[in-house]
Every structure is written in C-alpha cells, then in structure tokens.
Amino acid sequence: MNTERITAGIARAAEIIRAGGLAAVPTETVYGLAANGLAASAVERIYEVKGRPAAKPLSLMVPGPEALDVYGRNIPRGARVLAEAFWPGPLTIVVEADQKIPAIVLAGGDTVGLRCPDSPKTLELLKLAGVPLAAPSANPSGAPSPKTAEDVLAYFDGKIEAVIDGGPCGIGTESTIIDLTVSPYRILRQGALAEEDIRRALVDSLTVVGVTGGTGAGKTTALESLEAMGALVLDADAVYHELCEQGGPMLDAIAARFPGSVENGILQRKKLGNLVFSDPAALADLDRITIHHVVAELDERMAQFAAAGGRYAAIDAINLIGTEAESRLDHLVGVLAPEEVRAARLVAREGVSMDYALKRIRAQKPDSFFIEHCGHILHNDGSREDFRRACDELFKNILEG
Image (cartoon, rainbow, N blue to C red; front, side, top):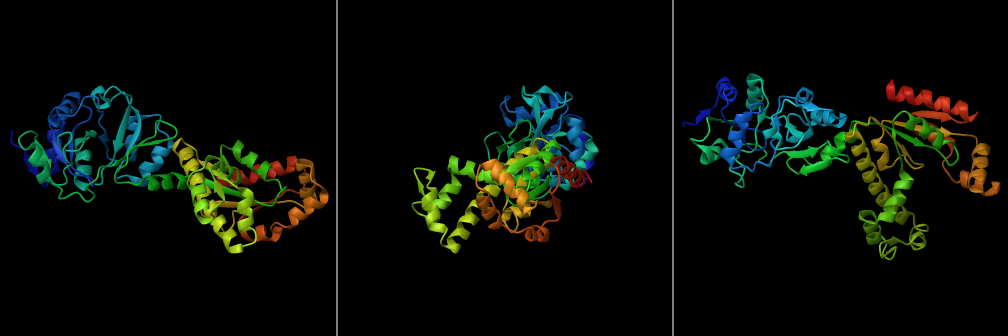
C-alpha cells in the first residue's frame, strides 16, 4: 500500500474515509489515526494497525457542539457549557452514546467521548466526510504520540491510506477527558486543558446570587425562596466549619501561619482566638486563608452542580462584600430588617437576653453599608408571607428576567 501525503485537497482524504480507509489527521494536540466512526469494519482496522486492546473504547472527533445531540443521548447542560467554552480545543467530553455508534467504538460500554479538534484541515475533513472520526493517537499502542506527519509515516508508512500534513502540532499533549455521565464528574485523563479551566467555565455558567445582611434580618427565608427555584444554596459559614472538621489544606495553612493553633488535625479555637483577636494584621491573615479555601470549596460544589445540569446558585454569608467570594457573584442581595425585629428573633431563636441581642446586632455592619454595596435590597419589615412574596418576585426577575 502506498500512503498518500496530503497537504491540500482535503476532499481526497474525505473520499478515503468514506471508502473505509484510514487517514492520519492533525490536531492541536497530536496526530490522530482516523476512520469513519460509524463503520465498524473501518474502526476495526484502527485496532489492528495500532495493536490497540479491544477493551479500550475510542473517542469520536466531531465538527462542533451540535454533534452532542447527534451522537449522544441525555446530554447534561454541563456538556453543552464545556463544548461552547472549549471546542474546538483539547477537551474530550464523555456522554451517553447514541445507538447509531457501533459497539466496537464503545468497547462494550454505553458511553462515548466526543471531541472537536482545533485544526482547520481536520475540521474541513469532518465537514466534507459527513461522518464522525474515530481517531486515537496515530502511534502503535505504547509508543510516543506523533507530533508531525513524519512521525506518523515512521510508524505507519505503507500501512494506512493517507496522512494529512498539517505541520507540527502546537501542544503535543493529548486532550483532557472528562466524564459527565457520573456525578460528581470525573477527569479520566489530565491532558492539555487544565481541570481548573474546566471548573471555572462550569462555575461561570451559573447565575450566582449572594445573599447577605445582619443576624436576624431574614436571610433564611430569602434562601428558601431561591432553593424553591432550583438554586444550589451554599452556606459559607457551614462550609468553613466542615473544612475545619475534615482537616486538609485549610487547616495546614492555618497551622503554618499560627503555630500551635492546630493539634492532631483539630483546630484549637481558643488558642487561635488568643493569637488573632488582639492583632488586626493576624486576624486579616486568618480571614484571607479561610476565605480562600472556603471559596475554593464553593467553586468545587458549584462546578459539580453545573456539570449535573444546574443553572443557579446562592451563597449565604454575612461577610461577602469586599472578599474573594464577591467576585463569584452575578447579583448581590442585602436583606434588612428593623433592629427591634432582628433582636426579637435572636432572643426567640437562641435564648439570649434582649440586651445581648442588641449588642450583637450593633457590633455588625449598619444597614447603610448594605444599601451602599448591594445591587438589590430586600426589606423584611412586614409579615413573613409578605417578605416571602417579595423574595419570590425579586429572584424570579433576577434568575429568569
């Protein structure tokens, strides 16, 4: 067999693919060994030429995000978000496979990886061939992945019909593979696209509402309204306490900055308090450490929620304004209530004295602070039913308007 080297005239490569042949194709990562992904006999040749184990499934190259609905089923919103963000590019998205995909591609499974390569010649080939391309890296199994047409010919000259010469691959590392058929999602292969970029794109796809205000103002009712609309509600203070209980990077950072504050993986709150409450600079350092790690955990939970199809999230925290968490917000809502109402709620809820309740409230930010910094204000100065209606109206406008 004579292996053609194609530098132009991609129509010729499309003819080879439609006829059941193999053509090595360039991508932004490495060269792939391509065949018609809907023709079982052509795909079988890929396994034979590469010496690829039959138990390893193949991904399909597709021309764009619209292919998710053609070759996949039950596509989660997160898959569409990532395809719009990173295709064409080095990301393979695993989804439920449509029945039209041959069993040999799936290697006995029911999922398929879809990828849109960032290579003009290969995208043109996909358009002209009119079929998805089964295209693992163009190397014998276990050998280094090829980054040039010369690399491919060194492996397969005389064994495949053609190689499209697109010049050297710019990245030289395989695509990242993410499985969105499971929750939480899984990175099956860390490749050219960083997981942090994936997480950021998923979080950015959400509409995130921050809910803030003083103790007893009525944030819980506001959050119940958001939750009823399908929002993921995240209590920043509860997340902080969970991280304290779990140990890990946040406690490690606290222990490094404040020696003696963590013993046997347990935060010594009294010792830590003695170290920071009389030292504003130390307290500021503690706030930076805790907020950074709490925000990272909020990001992870929001990313998982978005990957599973979620659209809205809410973050509940007294101290949102001016922190790293504020940068995650699309809308910031301040909940305000008269001082005497807040105090009465504290007395009823926590059994404290009215004098203590008022002192606690007056030690917090005044209403003017929230009015100045929040884009929306909810006044909780009537009945609970009236306030809930006001919450529902505002959040409907924010989320659906």
